[in-house]
Length: 327
Ligand SMILES: Nc1nc2c(c(=O)[nH]1)N[C@H]1C(S)=C(S)[C@@H](COP(=O)(O)O)O[C@H]1N2
Ligand SMILES: [Mo]
View: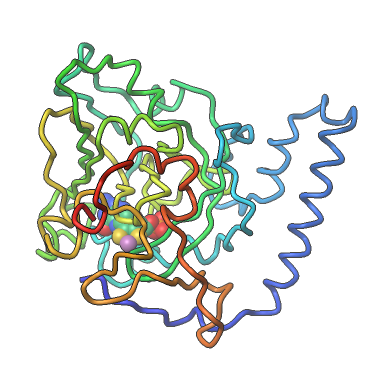
């Protein structure tokens, strides 16, 4: 069902050239602030977030992450594009559908249940969950299996922060993430394109990697619904579909859990789904990608990097695995 659709992203408009220089100037300004006494007045990071804020949702201030690899030097994709070109099948299968129809999603009140192989199962209200750890801003590349990519400044913290609080038992080998499936709020559920609820999974060592993130915001403010409000996963070294949106349940389990995409097409979407330019999807190459808006239709695609460029940080998790078989 992943059909490449790039309509509307062929041109590099003049506005983007402007925003790049503005962006660079902001970065220089940031450097100056961090070095000077002005940094004491306001956290420099809060200032960046504020400067980049689109002003669509409530502010979510965050400090720049110090997790190795968490702040990509790639230029962030424009908010207008990352919030209007989405995969969120609960709201329709066209890239433009979620921005149009996800307004009906109610993100408060919201709870996330944590159950299964943990010593302390709990159901957390979203606002309590958001207080579990300090918010960090991380700039991650997101690479879809369809061949497009984006760069997004996320706000959230490591999933590991939550994992340590629920105290996994010795049988907790995997985590399964289940997302909201409510027909009243999600028009896409009437289609049987996937088995609802949307389910994804990670091995517990992957889930505990500091780069695996629970995100509550982007561009310095709360997530727009179409990007997975109020809480989503972001696993930047895996194809986009591993990053489940609008999570309501996290189950700690002993055996590899079901995932929606594996169920839909086992030979196309494996459980691991690590970004890997050497293992093609049966219907298209994974060797290259097009950065949305930044790379025009006629521009050369850019090479896709092993583990989406996060190999130095996460490569060790897959040492000795045959990634052609275990794709
Ligand atoms: N619940 C849910 N989560 C989901 C999806 C979905 O359809 N439903 N699509 C996935 C896919 S295929 C991608 S590429 C990313 C897209 O995230 P974005 O719209 O924020 O870029 O979300 C992932 N998470
Ligand atoms: Mo995707």
